[in-house]
Amino acid sequence: LAKTTQPISMDSYEGQEVNITCSHNNIATNDYITWYQQFPSQGPRFIIQGYKTKVTNEVASLFIPADRKSSTLSLPRVSLSDTAVYYCLVGGTSGGSYIPTFGRGTSLIVHP
Amino acid sequence: GAVVSQHPSRVICKSGTSVKIECRSLDFQATTMFWYRQFPKKSLMLMATSNEGSKATYEQGVEKDKFLINHASLTLSTLTVTSAHPEDSSFYICSAEDGNIQYFGAGTRLSVL
Image 1 (spheres, chains in turn purple, brown):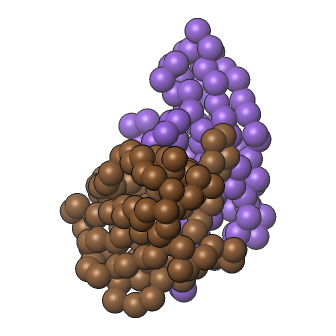
Image 2: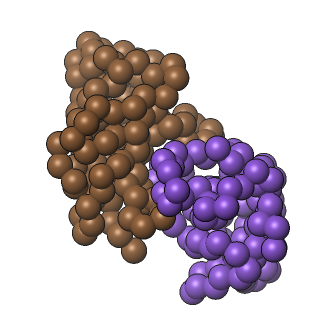
């Protein structure tokens, strides 16, 4: 199983861009990289998924270097409501069983 | 995105009783669902993998007789906490996979008195 490492916490201010990096040195060839957001007492919410290079959707961008050993979630112009815990997961069903395993996540606090 | 419904959102029960939590995939079929437990300010801990039509696969340290899982259809998995005790109080979350993406239920807050 690919293990992930993220910063435990980050602080930012409203309107700033936030970049959260996740290390996954033993990512497998078939693994995807998926990021989730979790608010207190709620289930995680899907943010974005990628395999390589860059992926962008309406809420975030995901940057994945060529070696795929890390990934960076970019949140443009954060607001107070982006205060949450962010998790990156590595894995995928193609090529075998997939056991989604959560790391410690990154607690992002956005200040006024 | 796909929707996973989890019910109830909150339950309070007396010690020694059993509690059932339902997890439904509303707009897709899921042969595999997952059950997690989360303590305050901690990450999600995988408890078991629920497989449609077969026995669940439990993670090490999780008592299968304590946490009964049934996955009788492609859209429904249930977790029953049997003979609940105060130490079973926690936040339980399920997920189901659509494509390569896990979609999560809103969670169930279990409080055992």
